Image (cartoon, rainbow over all chains, first blue to last red; front, side, top):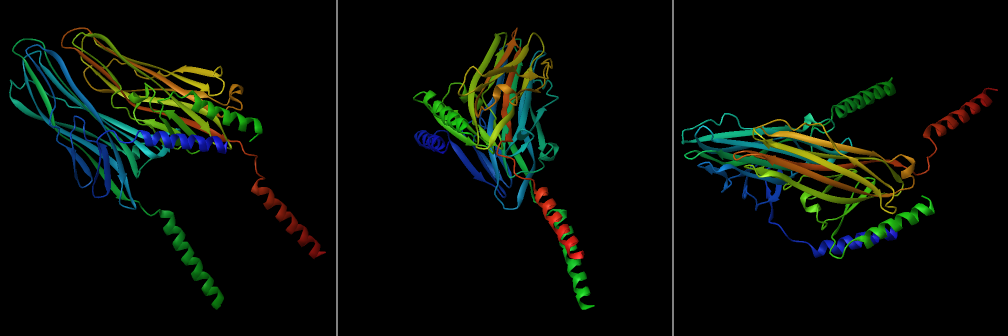
Length: 232
Length: 232
């Protein structure tokens, strides 16, 4: 067994060396966390502010004019997050999106939706790695008569909602956004663009377990009692 | 571990190496009580994305695993087949294995539809005839229109049955299919697979050590005997 494992390890190492170096993966460091992701998606390159990662996508949009039918734009970004400040844990995260849209005509419509998925890279909940996800749909994107109007949407995931999780030091985020624009007749307009998207993390110091205080005070009390006894 | 399982394991891992095509890229992910091996160059694997090992599970958040049909293009499908080999670490045997998929779908009203179907195969790496195939069961009926809606599907296989006796290396194959269909101009349907995970439950096979309570009992007994003698 030992020999075959060594062989496997050697093979994996050799093959690993021959394939290193591909996508444009970048790591940005925030106050207490670091973000690692591919900056060559529709989201564009990100900026870190505190413990959040913000994107200003240059061309994340869907447009349908004069009965061109349904047009969609969708992309998913994987972000690896690691808590870099010792003694600090990630407890929840939120996703926020903003953009603008234009809609004219009875059969014109636009839609924006997204999903924030999170998996642990260190902790299992039951048989699988701890994971949670939340979806949002932007409502009320009515007829604007052709004028450009702002929209926003978002959702959040609290790690405490998953049994056996609560907080973590290392996560993988799946950040998805969908846009669609539809027109059925001539003279109709539908346009929607995502201009800003971001994910923010709530990071808290790991609390000293209550049991430690209980144990410490008990120990002190014991010491006191034994001193009194030895004096008597 | 008996000599026969030792030889069996060495054979299984060697077979795994030999069976890989010349361009294969063998990846090794160490778990807690099992090791995961897979060829990242196998055609279906790219769709699943990068696998991460957490405990005795592997998890991936795909970004490009979707089927979309727009403007009456009719049915459109996307499928991927990936295989991962799992080797039980020395002193452990398999008890059960589970697999899960999670994603979302969004379709406009009208003649649109989306669906998912997937098969999970578990095969003895050394004896291909020892195999179990089970379909993943989804709890969703895929009838919600207009808003982005989550779906999930799962399956599990009991590896504690006699047919898996002495098997220490298994191949897990997931064959996953998504379909989306739209019947008229202006309609859209999209379904995505956003999370794929598989986890194992294992059992310790090392000889059962003497329970600590036995030593406690014996020492207490000896002390009692000593006391009795002294009293006499």
